[in-house]
Image (cartoon, rainbow, N blue to C red):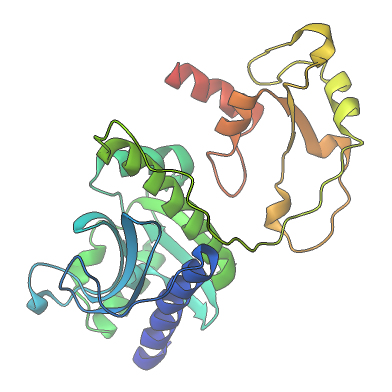
Length: 288
């Protein structure tokens, strides 16, 4: 892609993501942050304390030429940066690949480690392509010096698919940092907010069939409620989430597995494809 095309693709992606978040959160896009003085294309609030901005320039000095960053803020405190010049674009609406650098914050590191695919040695052609791209659009080449390793975030995916994954990741990180940052003994709740969304339809006829097949126990940890789970504690989990497609799918019992609530939550800590029962077992050993 030519220099002008690359810059256009980055701006289209960055601004499009901010607008995607604004639509999801029913929030207004702003052109200037109340918490910092960096120049931005636009930004949006994730909640009353956290914001995501698409920055024109990022760094201590405007002479650093660190362009095209998405930055997550906790008010005036920087929490995470995502370098959009690392993205290789297939065209103006599709990403060829995007490797995220290892973050500095320990909480972010833990999240990446548990939820993203770490690549110890990225293909040299990809490394050189991104370096060339950054030099071509006049961003700081040093930004990509550490890309010999990184976390694969997107590969051959549309902007819309990547927006969804990125939005979900940022919400997870907001939850993590909210728990870390909060030193209050109370929290304000109960505010009424308008919500508008589409929900995937789900059937229930397979639930008893799958639970019986799995002997009414969690296939990851072995939890087996009394009386064949009469109280309905166990969950029937989709191995391939319905959210991965916009089409109506035929669900078979082979596509489903029984999990307890805790293991079900662990399963969905990995996106877009959840952890398997075997992987959940390993995670439980690490966490418990």
